[in-house]
Image 1 (cartoon, rainbow, N blue to C red):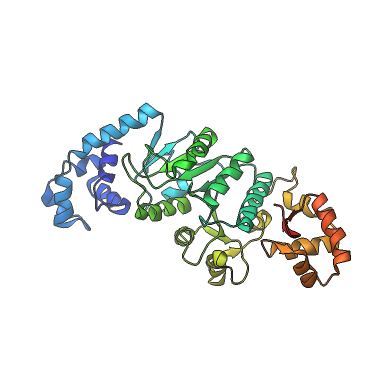
Image 2: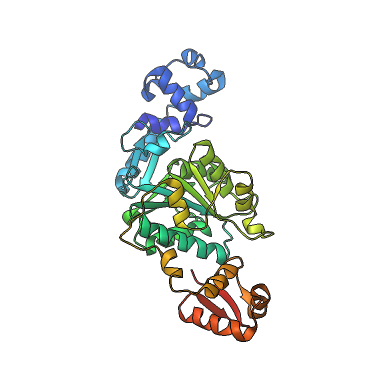
Length: 365
């Protein structure tokens, strides 16, 4: 492990090149004992990198410090050759040679679903995310929710998983000696009880922008499926979707309203056949050919089995918008106010709608 960590610290040597070096030389230790002349002969190395390797034997001390930090804090370090290394991630050619975790979850047990999206999540996106996870947990008890611990969709996914006593894994873009954003420290602490914080980065690594791109590939690689709940046309979660497609993972997207810039990325993924359209956890489960837990009814079923046809139509129209004023609803439903109002009162009483100031209505959950 010491030599693998040191190897991962050399700038210019990523996971793919690190594997090539080990394959040619037989072991990570040999990288630091080989002559520069022999290193130069290895494809992809050359003079500059071979010189960097020869001149970086001090990294072994840094690797020792890293191992000491891991042991002191009760963290874990998994080499890509270990049986405990996430097998899904191991399938990816650019998977990290070393993965660090804070938490004791077995990353090879259960079904892993990534839920990602914009940092600027709307009420619509938040409701979709929360409902999706609640329903998924009910139907697939061994599901693990994975995201990136960022603001918006990520933290909503983590909180929803914790709310329903489901393990959740946060993949971060820095070392385990810090937490970014700091505002999520308490949530991250709760996550480690049954889930984990995961990273490929060593201590003293800042959460720089390029690291988030690399972080996204880990989210994609360690999961069975990826769901983008809400994203702008250039959202970072689209990079996660791209990585997932590259790894032949199943990618899903929640559709948004036409013209809504905060859902434009999801709609574009669907348009380009880069993601399958889903509207519920049941859609995802069916697409994955998973067997749902029949002993528990999903929230989706419970939501609508007590509604009349007219009430279901109202819910359907409101789900296409974040909220609507009662006069807007009458126009869209072609129902007079005197007939619509009692239906809205009944839906609010059943807990399906919320009335906001100005007779504005929105769906709950």
